[in-house]
Structure formats: structure tokens, C-alpha cells
Image 1 (cartoon, one colour):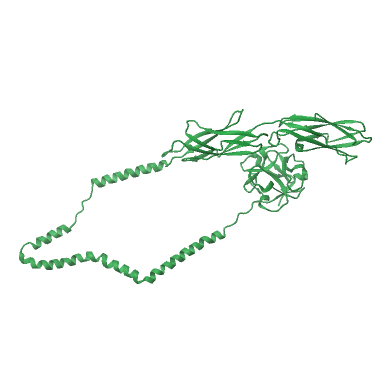
Image 2: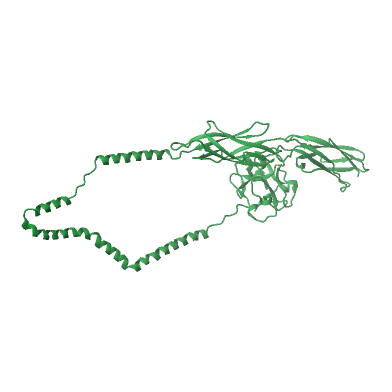
Length: 464
């Protein structure tokens, strides 16, 4: 080997969001002039720059290059020791590659963000908001959640009350709010409350929300019921005070008939005809319902065939009605897959979610274009690019080079604004950086990230 290398220092420490430098000394121990090219490799290579990128040395001379490490303040910068390496390739002897290795320790930081979804809930007996707790740091977070409100109007059921969140992940806490006093009548009332996310050694993170408690019955209904009861009571009182007198002429006619028969006993034989004559007077009263009811029953009974005929007609209508309901169900349209595919010029592969796991925070990758739903995207007028209900997103709203491109719940965040600009550049509006394939890879499973727009093929995209 015609090369000697030395890292000064071999181990370094850096805080996320800041930079540190390490010197790499190189000596040409051969007997010919040679040029050496330097390339960082390893997990932290995206955050490593080498200056200069090549060095020309005469035999026996020594040169120095500087390695600058700039890990972002994101969960991707894992806390703890991270090995790194630099590949040195001689121009005269390309097979004699040297890879000096070092160690970079990234310090830990914690950052927690909490959000109520939705911030305002409404209900008569309960409300069910969800608390999303995001770990934006690079180390695991353990936290507890508790609720409180001014005036002690609400009780809280929190599931789970304690959470452990990995770096770059989120935990959802289900909360049930119950008012301690029910509003039976009247207008709605607002109950402000606070959920506190407590961690050991730091001040709690407070999230404010509002529970709008509705009345069991609306005010207009209570007014209507009051008026109705008042009118009913008034009507009963008037009816009792002015009850109409019901009189019948049957008693008067009986008295007149007795007076006509009482003058003499000789009139007694005439009472029989009078009674006989009085019988026909009462017969119409008996005949009014009797003849009509048998005629109606007889007509229905004699036309027994007519009774059976309507029954089939009714069943035919019911069957035809049922058929009418089944036909629209058979012709109901199927769900149409959204949009078009987005493929890269360098790889001729399409953008999809890694592992086809359509969940919040899943990273994006490239894969062979199959035309499946998970490779179809919809460019919306609001600037978002959506597929299967999720939006293309820059992880945690990051703007630095190397920010992972993922899918997330559509929230209107500026980090979810993308446009096709320039010569086929897919640009994140907030970061003003292009969507690129990591390390210019072209194989299946290569991940996507944000990077300064440089015009390289791994940043070129088209739709079809």
C-alpha cells in the first residue's frame, strides 16, 4: 500500500443542529505522483462533507482534507456513537482503496409536541378528543397525561395514561370528557380544559381544548312545551266552567204518549195499535246498521276470488319494488384509484410507500411500476400530492438536506406542499428543495429524501 492516513481526532462529539470538523492527513508513500479522491461512506454520510474532494500528492508529501459533520436536529440523528468512514481511491492504482474509520458521538436531545384532534368537541353527555404526542427528539420519551379545567366541571378518562414513544414516532391517547352536571334545558356552554403531558425533570407540555356542552332539550322546545301545557290547562278550565247541557227528546215523547193514553179505560184497546205503530218508528234505528253490515260482508264474502286477486297484485308490487332496490346495488360504481404514477428518469421506477404500509409516517421509496393503487398519486389544487387518503410529506416539516420524504395524515401543513417545477423537478415548497433518491440509487427499495436541486437524474420525475 502506497498511502498513509491519520484521523485527527479519531473520535468526535457533535450536537444535532450544529457542526464539528475532523482532519484527515494523507501521505503518498509511493514513488509516483498520484491523485486521491475522497468519498464519505456509512449511515452519517449524508451529513458529511469533504473539502477538498480530491488531492494530488508527490511522492513523500503529505496533504490534509477536512471532514465536516452536520447532523440535523431531527429524530434521524440517532443519539450515541455512530461510526463513519472515508473511501480513498488512488487514480494511478484504483484497486488499492483505503478506508480509514472513525467514530462520531451525537448528543441526545428531547423535544415533544402535543396536539388535540379536534381541539373543540361537542356533546350532551360526553366528548371524545384524541391527543397526539409526537417525539421530535432523538431518544426515547416516557410521559404521562392528565386533564384539568377551571371550576372542576369535567371528569376525565385517559387511555393510556402513560406512554413510551420512540424517536420520530407518535402516540395517540384516547380521552373521554364527561360533564359533572347535565344541562337539561337551555343554551350550550363552553368548558375550557387542559391536558398536560408530564415528563421527568422537565416542565409539562400543556395543550388547551374546549368542550361545548349542549342542552338535553333545546330552549325552543322547552318554550313550546310550556305554551302547550298552558293552553291545555286553559282549555280544561274553560270546558269545566262552560260545560254544554245535553238534552234528549226521548223522555218528552214518552211523557206525551202516556198523557195521550191516560184519559179513559176505553182507550185501552187502542194502546195495542199505538204500541204496534210505535214499533215501526223504532225499527229504522235497528235497521240502519244491520242491513248495511251484512251487505258489505256478503259482498266481500261472495267475491272471494276478488279478495285473492288483490293479494297477488300486492305481492307483485312488493317483489317488483324489491327488484328495483337490488338493481341499483348491482350497478353501483366501484371505487376509482386516484391519479397517475410518478416515475424517476434515472431509475424508470415509480414512487410508492415502503412495504405498502399506508400509515402515518411511512417512508417513500422507488419500485418497479405496476400501476397498482399504492403507486397512483393525485395532484390537488391545494398543492398536496395524495394517495389512498394520505399526503406526501417532509418528515417533521424538515428543510435540511437529507430530510426523509414520507406519507402523513393530510393536515394543511406547508411541509405537504409539492410542485412539479423547472425541468421535471419535484420541489417541496417549504424547504425549496427537490425530491431525490438517496445516494443516486436506482434499485427497488431506494428511499427518497429532500436535497438541494442540482439537476441530477435522481431528481428528475415525470407522471404518466
